[in-house]
Amino acid sequence: MKEFITHSDFETQSLGEEFGKKINSAVTFAFFGGMGMGKTAFIRGVVKGLDSDDRVSSPTFALVHEYAGRLPVYHFDMYRVESWDDLYSTGFFDYLGEPCVLLIEWSENIENALPDDAVRIEISRGELESDRVIKTDWSEVQ
Ligand SMILES: Nc1ncnc2c1ncn2[C@@H]1O[C@H](COP(=O)(O)OP(=O)(O)OP(=O)(O)O)[C@@H](O)[C@H]1O
Ligand SMILES: [Mg+2]
Image 1 (tube, rainbow, N blue to C red):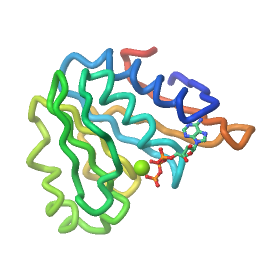
Image 2 (tube, rainbow, N blue to C red):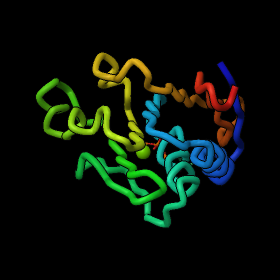
Image 3 (cartoon, helix red, strand yellow):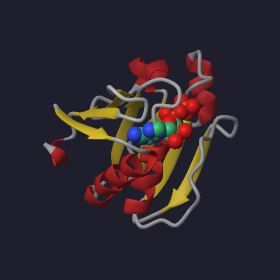
């Protein structure tokens, strides 16, 4: 488990960008951490690191946003997902096994449905209001 500490939205985005640059084949990033922890900020960086200029925002109502990068990117927000039916309707299962990058906010809500090889990225608050502790078991950053 590797741990990073960031001190601003910008630093979290930059860390995400470093992760994005290291992606060279299909991967699922499963984000854990409550409201306003910086999941979307991190994802903004990942998408940039995948060489996409697309605008990133939480797909809270749209269920999924698609971005065009070195690999196709699908950004899910599972905040409102409460059942297997809800999850099916996001189209989540159609993307598993596809050559794409899946970025999943609120993975807590679909923990049982995550693929076995999903990379967990857990964000929590640090000592200061703007500190974030970002933990992951991703082999590329150990
Ligand atoms: N170190 C930090 N990293 C990221 N965001 C930070 C940091 N410090 C403060 N912030 C603030 O925290 C908020 C993070 O918002 P963001 O939308 O990225 O969170 P989120 O985890 O996606 O939230 P939600 O669960 O609502 O989708 C922003 O308002 C940002 O300015
Ligand atoms: Mg978000």
